[in-house]
Image (cartoon, rainbow, N blue to C red; front, side, top):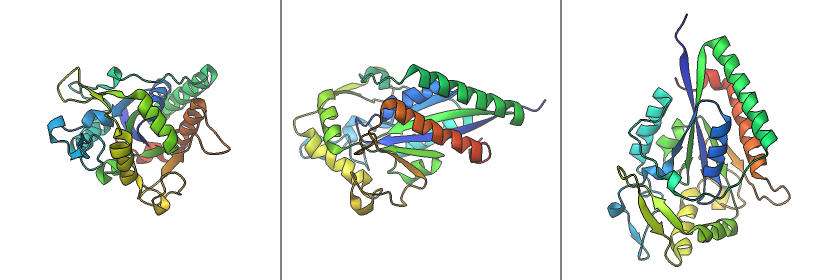
Length: 264
């Protein structure tokens, strides 16, 4: 019998801080068989080399807030092996997350659908699909990172909503390589206005026509980008709706090209 092959599909889940991307990633992990999550936040550089902007340490500057070479190398490892390296330290579990459950029936139905599909592919093609879910607020800044992603999602949430969520959250555990506890970060006054918002606009203006991050259509900067707008006027989406939409796109990807175009 031929050796079982592993096909890794890297899925980008991008969006601003507090847009719901990490919650989405965790729901998808609970649905998709053989899936792992990579949190971009775990690849922040050492605190001492972060730039100072408007008197504050800048954890959001698109060109400096992420160690892109380290993240890119890590993604390649996941692509090659289908697993998270055993020496990787993640700090995401230390951050508080708002509980946004999805409907149990939706979870059950989607879980069964993907399990059946992947079992069929394993039996028919001798291929085991592994999902690598990459979530990050600067996921579509670095081209080398973008190019490694097989499927690309972006959550676009109104700026007012992002601001209120960010200010309500306040405390973060920031990634410190080789430190299991991480470091505690509390937003200073005006951090949203002086650091977070300008950095978000800078990082995303080329993705949207006219640099309009709230209402602009997509440009060609990120090929195949799927835009999801949970609070778009007239069609508000629940977390269940968002998960359903993403799963439909992922199922379509595998059905039409996933087994041949994703890396092994």
